[in-house]
Image 1 (cartoon, rainbow over the protein chains, first blue to last red):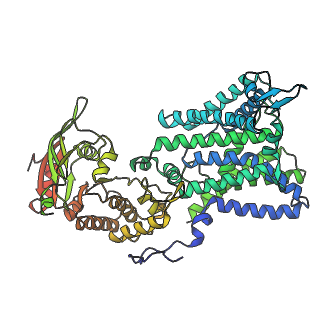
Image 2 (image 1 turned 90 degrees about the horizontal axis):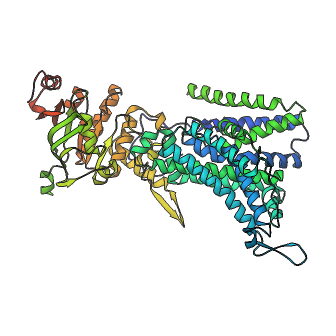
Image 3 (image 1 turned 135 degrees about the vertical axis):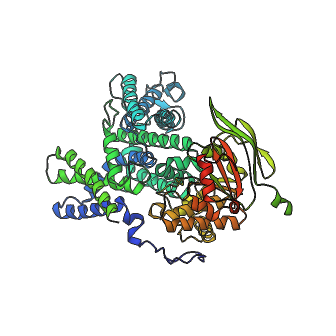
Length: 360
Length: 252
C-alpha cells in the first residue's frame, strides 16, 4: 500500500508492518472467524440438514436473539467496563412494552381511552392511526431501559463505583422491579396492534428473519460510529488509557454514561424482540442471558481489559455459539453438553490470542 | 515582532502554594523566553511537580500571578492552559496504546468532515497532518501504525507532535528521558531542538543531569519549595547544580 501523500520522511529504520500482521488478521476476531468457517465446513459434511434453508433461517434467527444485546455490551467492554444487567434489562423492557400495549388497548382504562374506543357491536376499534399503540409501547419499553442505563452510567462515571458492582446491583434491581410490576406473572402483548408487533419482531422479509435485518442495520451503524466518528474514537481511547483520555480533554464522564445507555437500549430492544418470538414476556425471561452475551462478545475478540472489540467480533461470537448449539442438536448430542463446550471455547479463544501476541 | 522577542512567554511572580499546613511552594519568580529551553531541576518533594501543575492549570496558586505572553492568566482547568498555548508532555506520555499514531495526535480534537447531518472523521487529513508533524520532528513514525508497536522514541514523537498541533508556545516536558534507551534519549533531545528552532519555549523537568546540560539554555533549581538558582547553563556546572539540589550549597 503506497502512502497517499508525498512522504517528507524516509523510513530507513522503521519497516512497514506486513499486511497479515495488522488489522483483522492480527486480531482474535480474525482467528475466531477462521475457526467458524472451519466449523461450518465440518458441519456441512457432518449433517446434510445443516445447510438447508430452514436450518439456516433458524440459525440466523437464534443468534440474532442475543446478538443485538452483544453489540451493546461490546460498546461497554471496549471502554473497559462491564454490564451484567443486560439479561434483566431484556426482561423488564419486554414486560413494560407488552403491559403498556395491553393497557392502551383496553377501551375502558384511562390511558386506553386515548387510543381505542368500543364500537356499537362490542368490538374494540382504533381511535387513531394503526401502529401508534405499538410505537408508544415500544418507546415505553426502551424508556425504562434508558433510565436504567442512565443510572448505571451515573453511578459508574460520576460516583466512581465499579462497573461490576453497579451493574450486578442493577441486575437484581431490574429483575426485582419486573416481578413487582407483573406480580410474578408473565405479560402478553395484546390488542389491535399485536399483529404488527409480531410481524415486526418475529416475522420475515423475503425469507430473511426480521431480527436478522435489525441486527445487520445496527451492526453497520455501530461499525461507522466506532471507526468514523469522534465518539467511537473516544470510546476506544477510554479503553486504551483512561487517564490519557482525560488529559487530552475527552469528556470521559459523558462518553461513559453514553455507552451504558447504548448498552441498556440494545438490551431493551433485544428483550422486546425476544418477547415477540416467545409471544409473551414471562417474569423469568432471559435469566442469565448476560453470561451468554458477554461470552459471545469475549469469544468474538472484545477484550475485557478494554480498548479492543467491534461489531464483527460480537456477531462472530454469537454465530459461533449458535452454530455449536445447533450442531450439537443435529448430532443428537445431549444439549447439556452445550454449556460445558461454551466454557471451553471462551478459554480457548482467549488462549489462542494470548499465544499469538506472545509470538509477535 | 522585535517586541515579542523581549516579552517572556511565561512569567511567574511570587507564586506560592499551600496544601493545608504544608507549604509546597514559596515565592517563586521565574520567566521563560520564546525559543528558550529551561531545565527545571530538584529532588523529589522540591516543588517541581507542584509548579508544573500550577502552570498546566491542574492547581490554582495560593499566591502570586501568572502572566502568559505579557497578560495575566487564571487557569481553573488544564483545558484553559491549553487554550492559551501551554502543552504538557506527561511522564507516562498519556497515549492510548490501542490507537494509531495519528489517532493519538488528534485525540480530543479530531478533524471531521460533514456528510449532511453527521460529522465523520477525516482519516486522510489527519494522517497527512500527522506525517507532516513527524517530518518536522524528523521522526520515522508512520501515522497509521499502532502506538503499542512503537519504540520509546517514537512514542515521545507522538506525544510531542500532539503539542505541535495546537501551535503551543510553551511545552513542558515531565521526565521525558526517564525510562528510555540511550539512542532514544538522543532522539528526544533532538526533538527538543526541533521545538526550539520553531520558536517554542520548552521547560524540561528532569533528574538526568547530562540531558539538561545537553539541551538547556538555562537551569532553574528548586529545593524545599523555593527557587534556589536560575543560571545560564554555561555559567554553572553539574557539580554546582548537584550541590544546589542536595542543599550542600544553599543558593546561587
